[in-house]
Image (cartoon, rainbow, N blue to C red; front, side):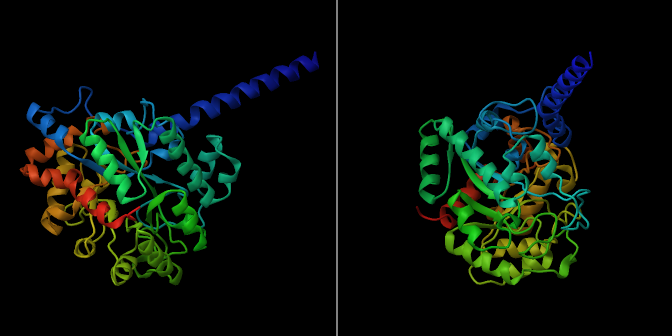
Length: 393
């Protein structure tokens, strides 16, 4: 009898554990990536849809790889996957790898020593054990997931590493192929684990964009949300990383960088950084948004400003609020330096998913932007930048 009871308890525990690993990560994702789109979607005119269908669209930032779902299949949660991106006419999507997020994460001050949110998520997702204890391996696991997806369906998804890759994707799309070009990015430089040799490892794994910091200070320097505050700039190791990234043709992303780090990077000869996902502080005075002077400085070095979609950076939850931030960005830095940086699937809200991106084209038309301006912001500026910054081949 005791043996039967123990066997029954063991069975219950196994079933409970299986249910946890199957359902808990999906439950977490649904809660962290809500969508505020009306049930029937935002209204889009035939004129706006026709314009949207003619655009070459690019987005600097989506954290979809964090959630360990098959990006080749349409999901009922989150903001994006390959089918929805193609339905939304997106040509190039940067998929960023998230490797560490401090418990109690906020826009004010976070400790690098705080408990990490990503470790239990990776354990719950049953990711490889090597990724539980190494930030570098955590980034590489997500990179391999993207590579495997592209290998399984090369007609729909292709990883972009070079200018030639970008040109090939755009040429295929111009010929009518429903193809998404995917670039790999890192949300912060901490996967380097303080070793410059790991930049080669990440480059060889396909990474072509890297943020220097995320929500905490790291070996490269200060975060906008770290303990060092605005005075904690680029470290000596950070200088070394920036120089090597320029030599390799990697995109330097200053999203989450402290004000002093931004100044330090801009002071280095030849840098052309971007701000991948943000709002405009003068328009929406969020602690998440850098001061306008620094944003203008990034544009002055030939960089781009990617406008996010979530309420904390655009001060609203409708497509019109994103369009208003884009107008503010154009007023600040000019139409040649504004782009999209949704932060899809990045534990943020969004007023539409990737499949309904034409709602933004409608909002930009309603906001009075010209067709030329809309084409630049929605992807033209990003394509021109990548065609010059990425390695040739």
